Image (cartoon, rainbow, N blue to C red):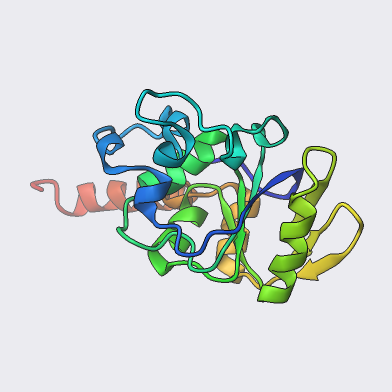
Length: 201
């Protein structure tokens, strides 16, 4: 998993509340267990019409936001089913940070396990960030995980809270497998001792 330290990039404004995981990645795209390729279908039913043509009004279809790395969204982001494909699709599209006033718990935790930083801020702060995101490609937002701040293109900064362990994992690029592999030497020692003590196992 890629480390998340400081991210400066384009932020896409999506002022919708209750964006659920089926909106993020519709159910027909859940047949794969691969984490790659899902970005093409991120927000599929909002991005494309029934003929597969882009819907011009949708924010991620606009030239200014095609390479957005930050998403500023409405309240209760990631609600609905617990599908991990939702953060997979977000990450595969290129978005590394989602900012909202609140998140569904399972989606929130799945983000950290997939290298995405979900940031919950008060409505007043999200309103400021939303307006900054609406400026387009020339307005770049900065997310500093180490110092736990989000800074607008105009230099206005907001502090956010994040669990210390989750922060550590993102800074070091550790998912569940990476955390386990940090203990590889101890695991090998245990297995060797167990094999000697119980050779019949």
